[in-house]
Length: 184
Image 1 (spheres, helix red, strand yellow):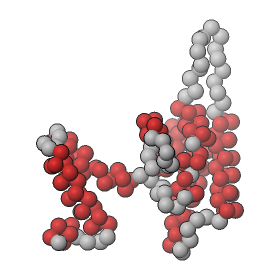
Image 2 (cartoon, rainbow, N blue to C red; image 1 turned 135 degrees about the vertical axis):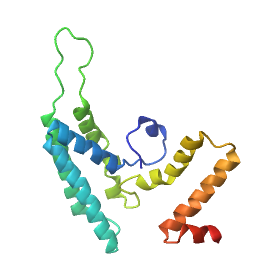
Image 3 (cartoon, rainbow, N blue to C red; image 1 turned 30 degrees about the vertical axis):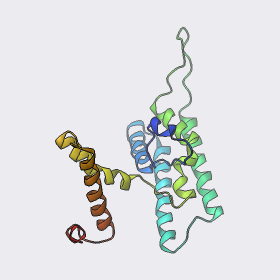
Image 4 (cartoon, rainbow, N blue to C red; image 1 turned 30 degrees about the horizontal axis):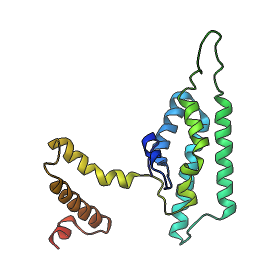
C-alpha cells in the first residue's frame, strides 16, 4: 500500500494498492480550492466503504457481497465520469506546439480512472488496509533517529535499532507495555 510515487510502480510481480488517506487529502484540496463537488462525493464514498468494511469485519464477514461491491464500483465510476465531464481536456491553442497541460484536477481524475483496481483493492481484498499509515508509523522513529544523528554509525547498529523498534511496536499493538516487553 503506497501513494502514487511513480518509482513504486517499477516493482513488478506484486499487487499494488493505493493509500486512500493520501487520496482523501487530495480530494479535500480539490473540493476546497477548485469547488469540485464530485471530489467530496468520492471522498465520502471511499470513507463509507472503509467504514462498512470495518463493521462487516466486526461481524465476522470476510468480504462485501457481490451486489454490494458492484454498487460501490458503479457509484465510483459515475462520480469519476462526472468529474471528467466537468474537467474536459484543454483544447490546443493555435500556434502552440505540443500537448496542452491537463492540470492537476484532470490528472487526479485520470488516476482515479486508470488506477481504479489499485485504489479499491482494500474493498476487493480485505487483507489490504485502507491506508499505509501503519507502515509509515513503523519507520517514523528510524527516520527521526537518522535525521537527528545524521546516520547510523554501523549497519549492525541500524539492525539492532530496528529489532528494538520492532519489539516495542509489536508490544504496543498487543497491549503490552514497552517496559515489560523490553524486560522479558
